[in-house]
Each structure stands twice: as structure tokens, then as C-alpha cells.
Image (cartoon, rainbow, N blue to C red; front, side):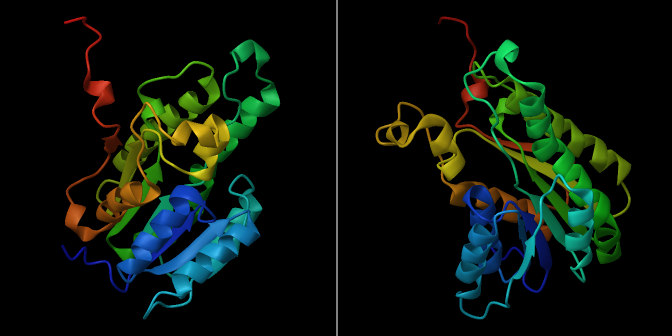
Length: 250
């Protein structure tokens, strides 16, 4: 299927690794001009080199910025001359395996700052360019942790649930502008962050389904494209059907 993305421009946050890098490569393969944002300059440069190494690709714009710093975000977004899509992938896990009595206020604030305030700041400053596009798409990377929970991950689960409702509310606010807002909520994805949380050995012979960053990126590419123009204010939950199962023992 031709996603009709060739010649458009997209901003991808968290592009230095993991899902963000996979999204950048998927969009580049569709002929999208990319602005890549991450606070990790080395990782960002590696992603840019992978994107720029693709045949017939325009040079990706590298934007080194922290999504929790409004001045840095404003400057980075202001460097992009047009935007047809914004994909917010930047995120952190925060403390894993800790009850809230052992979570510091600083840890709580850090998770909410990156996972929720970051997309707020990026979109606050990107909206003028998205409005000018006439028809644009915003895709936020949430998690199945928005609808189910694992023990010891209260800050992360809270932030991802907030991100889902942020997208829904924003889609309502932007109704009639041509800007769509959706989220993708995957379960465990094989990324450096997940391996850092669970350990490399957990992925050797996992007793749970694992998806790749490329699989998540495919959902993003569809939602960013005109092919999904009727899809707005919703979440693509890619969790292998886990959350659909009843706990009834039958």
C-alpha cells in the first residue's frame, strides 16, 4: 500500500534509539523528510546516518534538545520550516519494581516530565506549523501500561494513561483543523530501554510475547498517513490481545 507520505515532513522525538529510531527509518523508507530530536547527540547522529544512508533520502535535520526544557523545545521546533506530522517517542521508565513509598518525588516528576510534559511542550510549539499544513497527523507512543499494570511501575503506568487521555482531549480541541491525534500503545518492545528494565536474559527465551520497534513503527506510519484520515482520537493497542482476556477461570 502506498501510504502517500512521500514529500511530507515529520518531526520524531526520542529518535536516538529504540522505537524512535525505528519510526525514523520507517518514515524515511516512505520518502518522508525528517527532523530528528533527542537529547542524546551520539544516538541522534547514528540515527541520522542510518536515515541519510538510504538511497534517495534527503539529509535528516538533527535537533539536540531535552523535551522537558521549553526553551530548547521551542528553538528546536522553530528550526523546522514545515510539518505534516509529529511523532512523540521520547520516554523513560523511571523506577521499576518500586512501591510508591520508595519512589522519590524527583523520580515521579522526572517520569511525568518526559512522558507527558514533553509531548505537551513539543505540540504546543509545533501546532502553528501543523495548522499551516492543512492536513496533519500527531502520533504519541503510549503503552499497554495505560490500560493494564505491572507491579512496581506506578509512575510509568500513570504517565502512559495520561498520554492516552491527552491525545483524546487534544483531538477534540483540534477538531476541524485537519490535525488528527492518535496514540500507539504497545506491550513489551525489544528496545534498549526494555532490556535495561528487564535484563538482556529476559529476551533470550521470553515467556511473554515481544514485538520489535519495526512493528510499532508500521502502526505509526499508517497513522501518520492520509490513508488513516478517518482515524482520530483513538489508541492502537498492540498487546497480542492480552487486555481482551477475561480473568474468569473457564
